[in-house]
Structures are given as structure tokens and as C-alpha cells.
Image 1: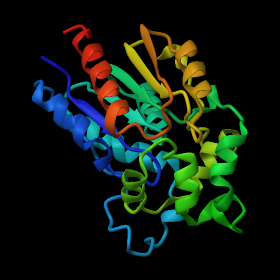
Image 2: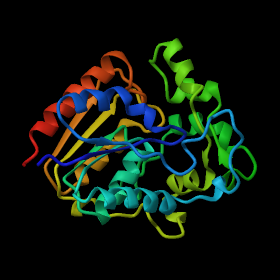
Image 3: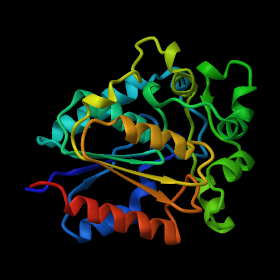
Image 4: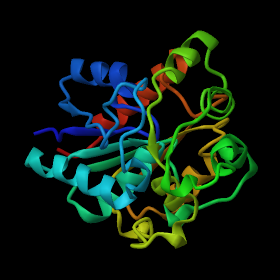
Length: 256
């Protein structure tokens, strides 16, 4: 029996990121799920909910672990951006059939400092008290650091959908050694199930070096693929078509 596929979205995003990719996979007979992280299913025009800024990575992991447990069988865990980081943490804790990381954010094991993410996040990081406050990328920062290379009309529509997220989660991602539980410190060599990593060569917020470092450390059979001239947001046009085709080929190769 084929394993179910669980899609994990990124920071400030929603499960809608995967709508067309999921439809293509379901047309080929795959069962897919895309849970929303806590408070990520709210209308983006609403003010942020009380307490969102202090939610932790562990809170997100526990929410997703409950979803996976209810499936009743090990899934392929597919994460984009922050969802890729969460996917690795979950894979270190739970039985799973495989791991797919798309433009993944870094765990502590593959953390890398570079200027482009700092530029993308500067409007948040210079705001007093951001570590315990709700955060959301400003439109100009999102266009430069997340939707670079995306046609303007598509980028504008996606930016309008961005929701509030947790400053505490962002802080733990940027400074993994400061996490109270060190939740992002995992031994990637112990992840021995098949893995696929896909990254855009022009990703500015999660640069390709993160995916390269992660791929080198994973302990199982690992496929690595770069989307040439693509940024962080591959869910449009040619990048999405290439991503979907690569994912379908890789899924077909999984042992049954």
C-alpha cells in the first residue's frame, strides 16, 4: 500500500501553497494531507491572535505529530521552507516512509549565515520585541526575498495571503542554540529513510547551501535536485511543473 503524503507549509504561509501539486499527485492515486499550523487558518486581514508571538517550534511539532499519529501508518513527510525544518524534526521522532524537503529552512545541523536572509528579515529583526510578538513580512521584503523571479501578479496575490506567525519560532530558527529545548538539534545521519531535496538556486531566504548541507548529512538514500534560476517560491509555472514531475518520479521509486 502506498504511504500517505503529508505536506507541511512554511512560515507566514498556509496549506494552499500546495493546492496544484496535491491535485497532480492525487490524480496519480496518492493520498495527500496538508494540515494548517496553529492559527494559520485565519483570514490574513484579521489582527494576530493573542499569544501567537510566543508559540514555539515544539508547539508546531506537537500539533503536526498529532496529525501524523491519526493517519495510522507512516507517511512521506513533505515540507517547504519552515515546513522542511519541521519535517526533519518529525522524521527524527516518528516512523515515516520518506522525507521530501523543498527549499528547506535549516535545522541546527545545517545552519548557515548569509546576507540575503538577513536583508529579507531586516524589517522584522529591527522591530523592538519581535522575539515575542507576531510577525509578518512586509510586501517589499516578501517580493525581494521570497517571491523573486515570480511574475508580479502572482507574487502580489500570494503576498496578500500571508498570515501572521510567531516571533518566538523565528527566533529559535535564527538562533538554534538559544532554543530552550534545542528542538532543532537533530542527528541527520539517523534519518535513514529515502529522501528528496529540491531547492531553487536563487533562493534568498533559505539559500541552497542549506539544502546542500542537509543532503550531505542525511543517513539514507538521498536525491538532490536544484531548480535552476528559481527562488524560494516554486508554486507557479515552469518551476512548479518541474518540481511536481521530479516528486512524482521519486515517489514512484519508493519501495512498496
